[in-house]
Picture 1 (cartoon, rainbow, N blue to C red):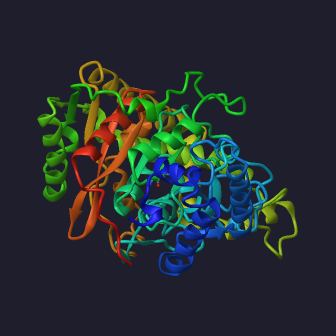
Picture 2: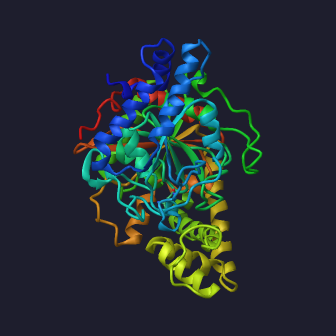
Picture 3: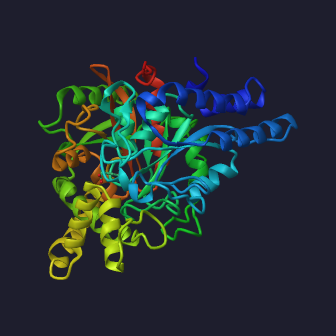
Length: 485
Ligand code: GLN
């Protein structure tokens, strides 16, 4: 097994037993970037010098016999919407092309404190607006399984990086599917946490009532290790919940309970690709064999999820992006003279087409006269969607659904058709509207392209979600195959 294919726990053992050093592990990740990233374009910034400096410090600790935590010496990348002090943080947008973050996001501060090694910042659709990284203002990230196809989005760079061993794990950001969908398309594991489980402080906001930061990894146990470090109350983010952070990794060792699994009929209609359905049903059978009860359930308001999200998320993003006026930071148009001119020209040049579309839709939905008809109505439907889940979770413990309606699609196929692109989120968005914890795990291949299954649990119950994902990994070899670039 190659070094970068090992789990965080295995690597930790090798580090503490001095079989490998943090410097070697960091070099291995940086070498993988050198070898593969000119083909994949997953990274916007690579932090070689900083990474090797931190690695050296970890090695010094190990040499003196100091006890190190599980994440010390483990290389990782962060989606470029996550603020990293002293390092360029672009949000995939030309507007912030040269923006150097003045402070660390809480997730970065916590990982750094744990000794994890930031090796670089990954490409994404600008501000998270998209499902393929084709809306990045810089370049498109390619899929490691087939470089003529997208890696998914918006955290496509993060998922491609993990799939190719460019870092052991990645941090992504998920507003409506941006961790789960690229994880599915690249054949890796990605968790969207419950809203409020992980601090959003220092994450460049897309839609504040949806945004979550979470890990993309090669296994549920790696997710558990990273989550334990980044989760929990943060004084800088008042939407974080005070709940005690469980020892997720420890909990994976408990006997697997005979859970009740729900299959929502709205996710298994005749529109679902039969080949994807087959993969999900194979996974379901594994759980039946373990004695789990499988039940059909219904989430009747699912059909409103896409229109509701594509009204509320643009509304929130139009407000969040209003602060990018190029006065204090960000792109400034060269020939702008008056203050109005500065706003207009700088924003026209700094924002891409999709971001502008969303600002327009959002501003319209929030404008006087339309607020009640659009924004308020969408909020009411969001409540109905949440209530659907409350009812279903009174009866079942987890829901199994596909993550994406298709495997990785060819670059350019949907780029000029925003509505077709929005439909990429059809299976992920309702869970985001409800703020639920949900993970995408690899569940097989169609024509050598990975397929993902989504496992969703009750609000704040990441423990069960991870336990199910871990249990699935232990009975299948679907995660074993690696891309061969
Ligand atoms: N694809 C969705 C969108 O474009 C979700 C993006 C995200 O989760 N950041 O809004």
